[in-house]
View (tube, rainbow, N blue to C red):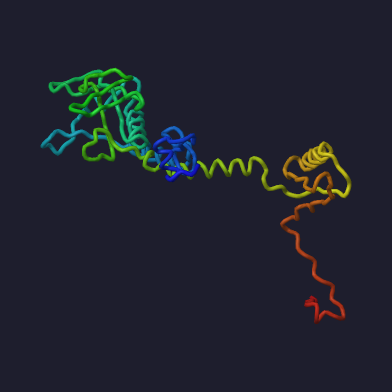
Length: 265
């Protein structure tokens, strides 16, 4: 059956028996798998580490001098994390998911500002925006005033921020696919260091024994391939690796030195 749509259109609407792939490289990309890409991990860790360790100062509106004491939320924002770990986790969630969520568990001061926030895994939080904004935690509706929410990459009319990983999934999927292919290519020894052949009729079992003896002789550092048509093989030896100090010997000068290019010294 010939489909009138392109493959990614079928995947989008999940039509037919083809399992939809999240990327053109057929590698699923989500926040967990994206962090397995070395470039994504390095960028997220670098930004989160750099910002979370910067010094913090709090100012009162209309004053030029910082406050002597930081607000409670900036001194000990969580019962399980210090400020550096709290900021690192929040930034990591922002960079990967585009949103950071927390549950306000305590308030302080005349304005009852949040003084303690426990960060939430983004998968536990759902939001609906119809006639009003409905927040759900683990599927249960909660008071919007109890949710601490930060977002990045904001768009008009959207309550939550855009996910950088979701929008860069094609490039990340390509990188993950290339790493997977290269790992299998080198891990399966796709490029042998030589070939053993023989003009005798050697059975497959004997060929495997020859390969095993070759690996044992060379301490497993040089793999060998046994190729041929049917059960016919020929023997070929592989010269040892030349030392770095090896030089090709000069030709011996003789009567024909002028024609052979010999340079006697």
